[in-house]
Image 1: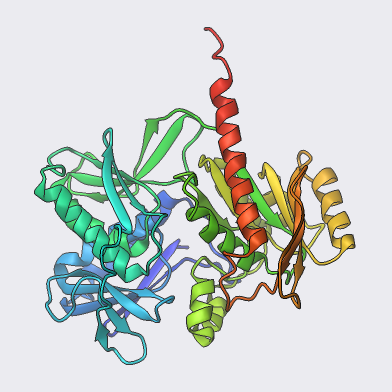
Image 2 (image 1 turned 90 degrees about the vertical axis):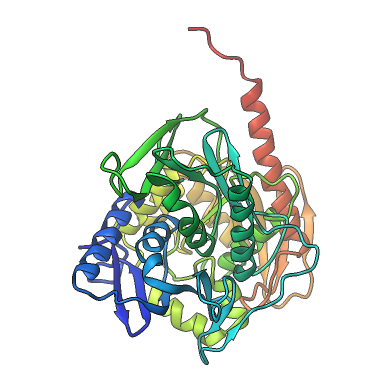
Length: 447
């Protein structure tokens, strides 16, 4: 079965990751998904399905790797390409030569109305693009909080500055790109840089090995590289804190995960490579919280579409992803049932745990599971009670672990400014810093 699917419905290209017959995602690495996406694009092109025109809208989940491949394949066929952003209830124009569809404008899902929200005056760029050695860093600016349309406009402006200053000269065989980006920005980047180089390879944090960063070729104009091929680059191995957010079902783990993500990214000393993934097949991706606040009906519909079953194959795929991530701080959540083989498989790859519980018995049960059922005992750095009816947070202790309560974790509210969330965000960042300092202080063993 194909790991990536797409088909046209009028002027909308519907895309999604491949599913098994039971609705579970087909486990695959990023390079295989890119190969399948490229093959499907060629198949549709051969069938004459891409006829070009004024506007192509793309709807559905994509990875950064896939977005580069699709953007390069289709950009020259349409005057404008817009990508769905469920947080905004709109498509966002990421590529355009059409005056009626400016880059960064929104096209409303319901009405098709085109709107361009003004950029905030004198704001720092929400997206940064610069060189580190031979790698182009393209990443979201954690210090600036804006919507996806502004990120697209800032990415385009950053690229224009690099090109005008001669810092994107092109000509080399392969351009390597790395950084925490967005799908929208990646479409814009691919359209601007792909023609300057023999190919484009994008860093995949879910692959590689100790001492190796792995890049996946997403664009190629030469026989020297094939789309889906991988390129390994030596790197200095760093310690990684892989923190699992665990606890019973319906305690608000997904809301807490997204609140922590927002809070951490606002901290000045947050690690540049902070990474968040979901270890649950419940359809609550990183998009869900904002979509639920803006359009609850759409969020519920999409969650039902994306939700799949908690199977051994799903668990093994997530465990593999977590095990190979080399980012200095990784945060992920898991399902709310124990003891299960699936949670045992996934949580065994964690280095630390944060628990969200309702009762003291929950705490006892999960601590026992983490001490006795996993590959090795998993230390807790925080135990927090979820108080749905509460009106305020409490912090009862900060040492030896953080304890307290968080109130009313609702999908319709942003909990990132809650006191216990702020305290936990700082704890996770400090954990990462202390690990880095310990790593630096370890003397090298002579050959």
